[in-house]
Image (cartoon, rainbow, N blue to C red; front, side, top):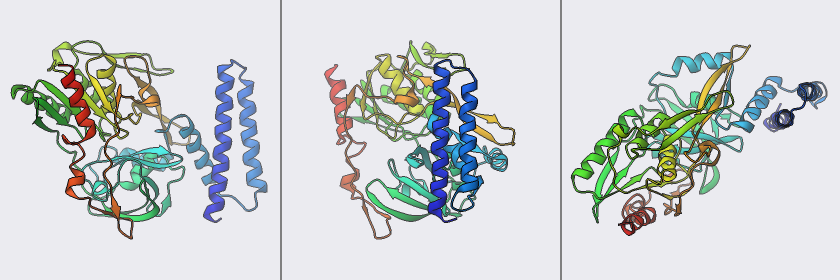
Length: 405
């Protein structure tokens, strides 16, 4: 079967599954009898039967089933994944292993893999991959309807080995073939400096328990050096767990609710500020953009909802949930969000992200590409516009902090 026909079959089955799921949800919300659910299942089975028996040629039913499963999962949870028994064994085996990687942070986007961020100095970052780019293929395999977990498994491998990608860039629409050499990706350090007007600036490109401690040390040093205001830049910070975001937010909050976790069968769990862990009361502005996700979003939401400071920039991505494996009879699993993190004012971060009270569009770094779709490094004066005093988002944050005294 050619790739176009396979795509049509899988897409059709995915649509049917989404319809099935929607019907089931509507049946539940209107408190209809369980017989309605079986009616939907019967319709689904009937459609699959017609595809198998009457389609123009013998379909790959394994592909149909996989596409349907991933389509159904994505329709309710863009971060969910289905792994068959073999994939799950491989996933478990390598989950905590320090494998070579390319440094991409991904999300699902229109059935494909969207680049949320690339870790600075990683192979992906050096190739110019960033927020808004789309991955169409990995190692010659189309990622259409591929789960996130399966994609990460393909991207990882031994350091020094090569992985081939097909990429559609945000500012270069023609698909480009890119080869990345896997490496031991190291999270970038927390950077800080004193700007004019006794404003301390802290740039956080990634989060982990160790980097939260480094951020605390940077805050304390800036205060010791005479900082009277703080700017915390978490733009394009997409790594780190929700626990890291809670710990980071607590550095600024002496009281109030940082976030809470809640699901259909998961009782509400509150995360309130511990006054003993707060280390600063200086006025603060948190900078965000579309690449701000997960841990950094919890920081931004907590600062804004508790009126502890200003959030300046662009709406965040929307990714903060508790993902858990749920076993299947075939030995596989689905990785599903069983609870979501909510902001203090009751908004699910994964659903709506965090919208800054002061919205400012950041300066575009104009990137040029060669004939192979590879980026040509921008000039130093263009790079200087981002994440410095000349950056319009930084300038606006300093203006707001200064106006507030």
